[in-house]
Length: 452
Image 1 (cartoon, rainbow, N blue to C red):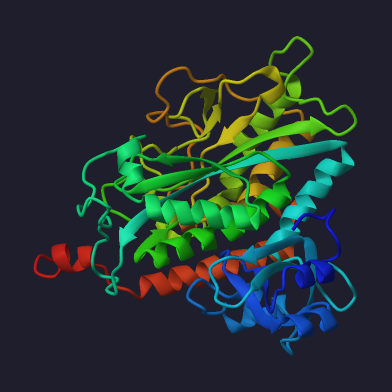
Image 2 (cartoon, rainbow, N blue to C red):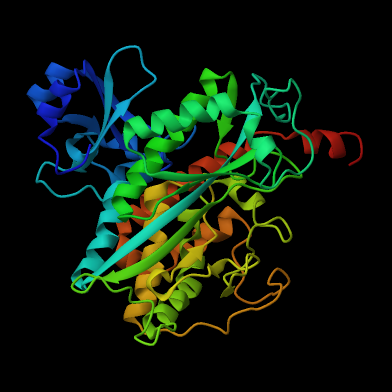
């Protein structure tokens, strides 16, 4: 539902909606909230949720008590959630006529909740607005289709396609391989059209049964809402066809990981001009500063782009994933790529974010890093023409532990995102790492059981 349509109440009535899924995104990107009859939703004009939902981990656990009560009210009070009429979507797969409405979160004094990922992105966009700039983004979402399995200890397999066979080998850009799952993708496209999601191209990626969906460029908050909805839509379409769609960063051994590449450019609000290009059509100083900001600050923001232990399995040389923040024109071995384009469409592609990242936080991190480069007038390293995988400078943290330590100690991240958000986000990552360490892997049983 676009913001220029009638009020949300009229829209719900006109669409004959009977139920409303009232949701917010937690730090992981999980939709949390309530399902409400439409009459109750209209009468109440919002909902309340306990503050603690924003400090849940992907396993549903909470951070340790001492930190929990230092970040939240000790009484575990509610925060106030108000629907955003511009973020209302029809849900096409339910039996009842249902809408999903994304909510903004506030405390009892009407202040935005600092732990809310959507509010974090809005805070970064306000920085650009104050400078007279308008960011534009276009994400590319990679994911795997896999056969269903109830045993998490078993490796994932490619699903059986229309031919009755499993895909094997690398099928990059293969039309026939993508067509194996035509019925699934037809539903996906129909459902995305019903919801008004601005998806564009479908591509078969390098991995076995790995796909990519590209989004049209647009307003960062609006696009982030769409990606948030799309991930659920894709999973629902897969379930309908008795397969699984996963956005894990590295779900399959010896296969490429899944990324969320973020194309970004900046417009001058008054003129509509792309500030990344000068009057002569060449790279502008603001473009170079933006790239330098990404090089300088993305390593300190990596936990927002690679949020899970599994995320760091993706950062390996020669696996179509970056290992540093080098940049270059049309260079996919760099973490930052300048795609070929006209001066009006000049942009930089951030290839670091994983498909498992919370889209609000990943876009916020990417835009914040570029913004800092622009206001600090930074200068990037020389662009790389050849292979960038074997370069040791400008490297990324190699573990989640190292990444959150770097983020924890960054004064700029704390200044712009706030101590409460940084402390809360890091606390959830640490809680997930502790949970992960309790599980003994099959590798440990295979190689250590009888040898050490």
